[in-house]
Amino acid sequence: MKKTDNNLTSFADHLTNQYGEYGTAEREKYEEEFEAFKLGVMIQELRKEQGLTQQQLAEKCGTTKNYISRIENNASDIRLSTLMRIISQGLGGHLRLSVS
Image 1: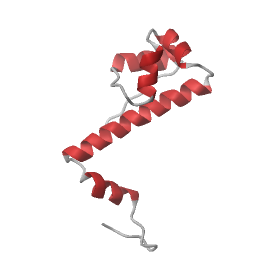
Image 2 (image 1 turned 120 degrees about the horizontal axis):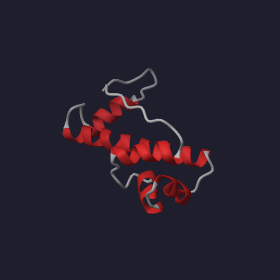
Image 3 (image 1 turned 135 degrees about the vertical axis):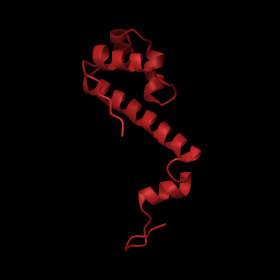
Image 4 (image 1 turned 90 degrees about the vertical axis):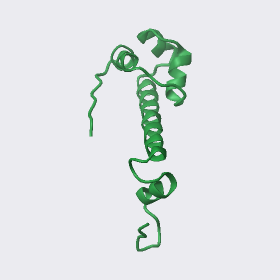
């Protein structure tokens, strides 16, 4: 583990120490859960920017308030078709995916 001049551990090193190297099962699980968390936060922020309640967003895209809440709170897996509907019909945006 590398230390900086101030004897601090970098965040990347902390993740490796806590969850293992990239490619290990524990690290992959962490990375997957973090991506789901980021997606939930993104949807919540976009919804709030547009002044929508969870109920209003749910009605616009044909789902339930409970489902929107579960997505925003990282408690639900989301199907790609549902994500696309939330982004396009609910939030008026376009979904772009990339693989790296």
